[in-house]
Amino acid sequence: MRPAHYVNIEIPGNEKGGGPSRPVVAGAILRVLHGAFRRYPGKFALALPGKENSLFACIRVFSPTRGDLDLLVDAVVDNPAIRDYGRIGYPRAVPEKFDGPWKRYSRFRIPTRKADRDPDHALRTRRIAQADENKLPFFILSSASSGQRFGLYVEIGPAADHQGECKPDSYGLSVTTRPFAVPDLP
Image (tube, rainbow, N blue to C red):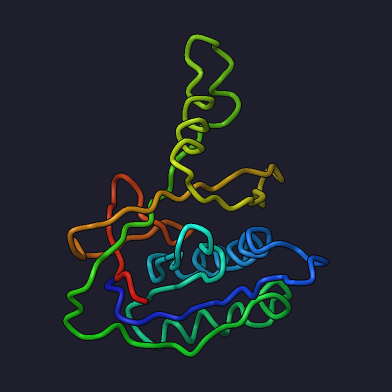
């Protein structure tokens, strides 16, 4: 997959303070997107454009073709999380021969609680502390199979360039064994 097209899902701020916060809405929208990403594996890559204080104002989804974005929008547009709390923008093409900056959005793995049963090997505790120290953004999600809630941490970093084919996971993120980057568009 090459990130040639993209669509933004805007998450308006809640100025009145009565509804869910942006991170909560972003988590709900990612749960919906995850279902579509699993239905169409390897077609979509995720990005969180914006500055640190506005990371959850927009979720950007990249795909190789405009038709793939149409598939995605058709699959998610009627879901209440997106219909009531998000605004899907108009699909756009990444400029040809894009020479701007690239970013990698990688899943930062936090082991399950089971990993901390041995006090001498508190890997989960160390990874959470590392994520907090680096102020990594995270989504609160629920597992459809076990019902457990978990945090999906995203490590964001610059990349030299595209680095070949994108093979995103079912959340649209880069993983250690399949690193890739997407254009860092304004």
